Amino acid sequence: MPSACALRGVTFRYPGSDFELRVPQLRVDRGERVAVIGPSGTGKTTLLHLIAGVALPETGAVETAGLDLLRASDAERRALRARRLGLVFQEFELLSYLSVRENILLPYRMSPALRLDAEARARADRLAEQVGLGDKLGRTPDRLSHGERQRAALCRALVTEPELILADEPTGNLDPTSKQRALDVLFEYADGKGAALLTVTHDHDLLPSFERVVDFKSLGAQAA
Image (tube, rainbow, N blue to C red; front, side, top):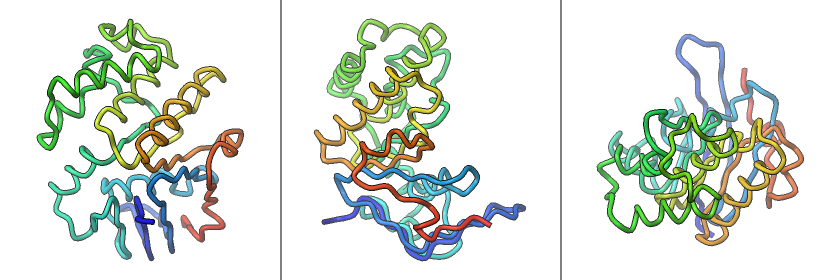
């Protein structure tokens, strides 16, 4: 089966820091649901940044959606993130001055690789309806609950129909009902589109929902 992403012999360091991440090997296949666990500070978020091409390793190889990230140009990596990846951040990163609809469609405003047309707008509205935000599309984030803001961020990550979703603690600090709804949104999308889902989480209650769990220690990943 083709891979959604693969890392081999990767090392990464932040300039001026003692932090070093080493990932001997990691592969996520298309359509696979994978959870990544491990202690805080071990580099799990950095792993997502490497897969997304936001950060580049010092050594090794990172291939995402068939693109060799070290050989790709900055423009190619940006286009990859815009067209083929869905990024879910811990802090949601919604813009306070934009409506829910405008926040969901933000990737189209930010990237010339995407075309904002009637189909994209309809998809944004449809996603919002599916997560229970259909009647809140005109509101700004300050008028939403914590769980509603999180669902808006999920819609933004999915509106471009990505083939790989990278989610960083997508259910952190959510109540049980909001947590389950967020998972349902991610899993239903991944199942429906055959997309891969790679999720970093500290919540071990979520792990039975994933096909595979990767522990940084068993992976051989190290942060020094």
